[in-house]
Every structure is written in structure tokens, then in C-alpha cells.
Length: 301
Image 1: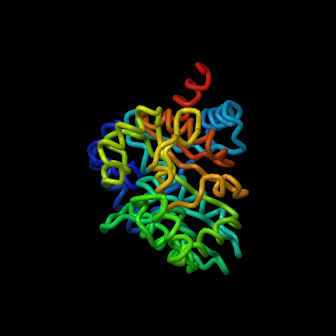
Image 2: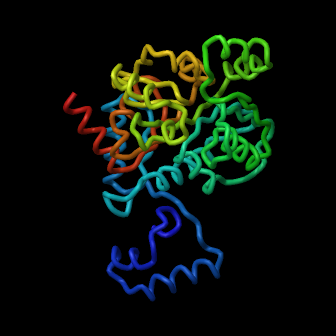
Image 3: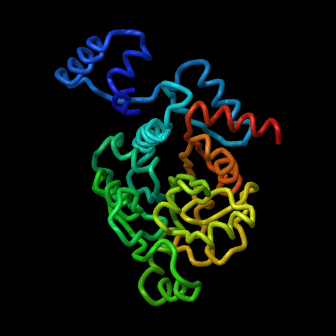
């Protein structure tokens, strides 16, 4: 609660029905003994059953569900923690891993088990943004690579450019072709999912103009992966923005042997369902409330 969801000590005391002094004492003792370690337990019968049901409903080989303190808690930090722990166990020498971006993946950085992984290569799967930000794709990939002393490949271009012709020129004449070619041999990808809402990262950063948002929503857009916008059936929408995204092609990502999708939140359920159809993940990492909502959605068609 305190380290993952960043709840206040008073809120924790109320949730656990204990005194605030007890919370302060336990946190102090944990810090002084250097025993603080954040982990997400997946061993309870309820969670295991929920994971299995979600696997079957969406034909996903593996589902990881993060716990929440309350149904109304923001799941971003919990999913990020579960993602960091999962990736730490996934990495192997000589692996090539492609990374997406977003708030959930940024939270995963705090839970990576930093170590040297020989010959690990990290690829940012999408271009960056033109101002400094914690959610800049390039910044996330670089920090991840630094944690494992890995080589890092970046798409040195804006996330969305002005035309398809500019995109072709950047790939063919400005050195980005090497990164795109390298991405065809990725062993794993880890991506988040965005919803097409006013509060979505893609809108808050100004990557979609207001008229473009209205246009893509009129075409049935529900979410994005690496700024590639798709509908509820997991199909990329027919809009010019999808021809201008400086990202590794979705079909290239879908060919990676290991495909991890990490996302959750009430506003993202439709987007996550579409993303599952689009990427066919081998692992889905979400929270218990979102998992239940996804099951309900699958049951109602």
C-alpha cells in the first residue's frame, strides 16, 4: 500500500483497522532493517482462479494479476510493480527486447532487479516526444537498458511525423532503417495500452490534435499501442495518423515469440480487449478489478 500504491499512513491505518502509530512503527522498522522489498503475490486461490479464467476467455497462455488495496485504487503502480518483477525474471543473455512506453511501464523501473545481462539489447519501439517528460519512450528505454548494462537502440524521431513521405525518408535515408531491421529479430516485446480519451497520454502530450481525436473516434477508435490506433476488434483504423507513426510495425511486434501487454484501469477495458486481439499476447499483466471487467466483457460478447 505504502510503497506501491503510495497511500498515506492514515489511509493505510484506516484500511487495516489499526492505529496510525502502528503503521509508522512498522514502516520505520522495515526501513531500518533494510528489509523493504515490494512484491506482488499471485499465490492466493482467488487470484489464481481469476488468472485461469482470463486465460481461457481470451486464449492467452499466461495472465499475471496484481492485487489492489481497494476496488477504486489506481492500478497503474501495482501493474507497474508486477511488470518490473516479471521482466526481471524474463531477461536472459543475448536477448533482444523491444519496449513500449506509458505510465505503467515507467512505474516498472522501480521494481527491476538491476544486474548485468550479457549481450542484452534493448529497442525502443516508437519515436520520442519533443520535450522532456518521464513518459518519453526514449527515456524509458534508456533507463531500462542502463539497469542491465545493455545496448540501447532508439528511433530518433518524433512519435508521429507530418506525413507518410517523411516517415519513409527517415527510415530509408536517415539511418533508422537499421533499427527497423533489428526489430524483426526481437525475442520479446513489452508494451502498454492507451485508451482514446481526453486524459490519455497520447492526448495529454499533444500527439493527437483535437480534430484528429474526433476523427479517429468517429472511425471507432478505442485505444492505441505505440500510437498505432485500433478499434474494439483489434483492427488498425484507416486514418492518416496510422501512416505517420514512427513505430515498429504492429505485425513485426506480433511476430516476437514473447509478447507482454501490461495495462489496466476502468477506462481501458475496451482498449485492452482490442489490444489482445491486435497483438495476441503471450502474457497479459493487469489488476484484479480490470481482470474481472475483462471477463464480464468476454461473457457478454
